Length: 374
Image 1 (cartoon, rainbow, N blue to C red):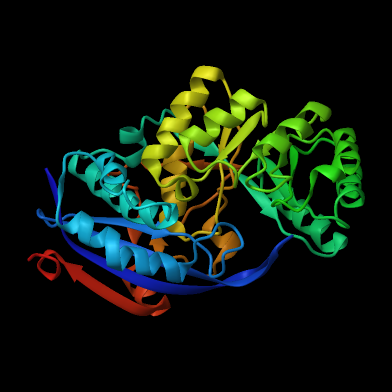
Image 2: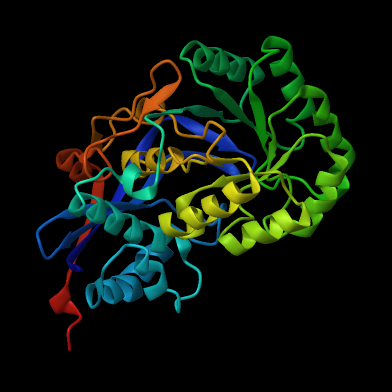
């Protein structure tokens, strides 16, 4: 039986080594909520809330997540007992939405559970790979800068490159990249920058042998994605549209996509991600694990998830050093010859650097069972 006795929230700010630009804006500094939980045996588990500072990706923000955790989710978890982390989502089900906040606390309980079992996180999730292929994302910028970045990543061995696109920086951009890198496994991510009326432009991307086009239309346009996919040779991958197993089922049944990007934080945690994996494995729908410009805590947990068999496409899981001068874990996540080794020690397989964590934190809140016992 798992009884959580204490939850600590760290409000963290970390500056990116390089600004990250998408069709929706530019990120210079990343906010996180790091979740530390302690059980009745003294074991510690770690999770991360990877919402952004503003609601450009989903409706959640760091501020709304902090409120939901403090007011609803932490009291719920501290006043219950659990036999398995998959019970966490059920206990929070009556609270609508707020999936990233839920995912942060659920991940910490998964970490504790794996440590109790004396197994690595990838083992308890059902992972089978000892190392995973690593992909990388190139943000929007001057074309020469983007080409130079891609060249660097190719030399570092990354197995797949994803390029952000938007109207005005799309067909010509991809054409120049293809001319320079004719055989590079390449995909384009639109972050919902297009509408169905742009179908003729998007069809031009078929000429460039892309692995996929990620989320070209709005998150709530599963039906329009179906119409778009009918006219494209290139596979559509859905990201923001898939927030649950039910979303995945509907999108696949409609024919709205041929690939799904799974982000544990977006779907509410590892439990829901596992359900999507099982469903897509049965139908042989390719999966890959997306990234949220996370710290090493989420990154390590994503490595564990990506070791499952249906994650057949290199994910957005790059080295810690791509984003941070210093991460908050050790050892940091490293890419060697295009692959990341899957940790095998109990739990998520890395240790949290308390000194670094506290140096990046501007607020720390502690919650105990006694705070909520009547």
